[in-house]
Image (cartoon, rainbow, N blue to C red; front, side, top):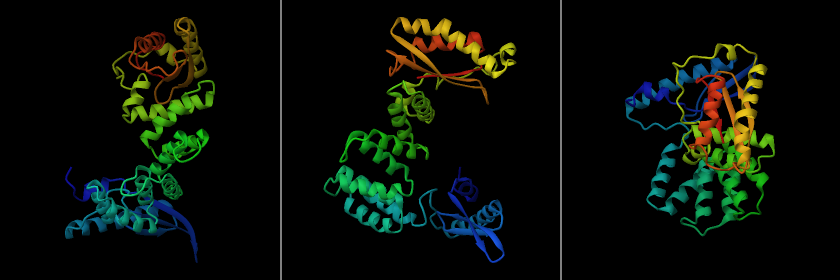
Length: 323
């Protein structure tokens, strides 16, 4: 796609909307943070729509004059951001550090995070975990996902701090909230380590599935069913699908008890039904327990056994995920 006006308008530039007051009542201010483009209106959606029109005008003028435009999330000082990254890639850490220190004064949370990484890795500076943590914590105040991920890693691995698994989990969660792929995988591993806490297992499963669906290689190995393509032409089991959700769930539980669990128990394992969803599609989530827990069984015949059993009970048009 050519980088014309339509291209830039198709990008997901971050927009923030704030409520406030003026002399005639409530008002909302919408801001495109990468451009400092603002619009206000008594209706928040209308404020955003007006701001979008202003953005379109700004981009059209920039393209006409040959100006550079930021990528989504780069911010209004994006040229400095790019200059720092170019210096870092050239291993000119001194220049990168100097730029990021200036940018940090402008409340650039990614610059703060990058400074933390310099001290964490000892690139161009003496390795200093305390300073790394300090910069990550500053960026974390702005919910920077990379900063939260690195803080989680520090607490999980006792890197310059005392090991604190609960803090690690909390920082991983904050990074996952912003779709940080590595955090999703790490949080999944942490929460699925002890499969006796059902709430942790459910959250860990969701996190690992998110990582797997986003393409994380190790998460895909852990999670069975991610790459399976459903046969859209398969015939649906109308008798099963016309049952109530509770009645469907009883059938699924019975199939697990009679055909799946006995085979796993023979080898010292077990299986836990985590969730059963029917909207938009029938989706069954299962977790191995006992000797099976933690094994990379995504591509084994065990998953095939589970899938084939449930397809026979229901039909081929189901999603089955097993970890």
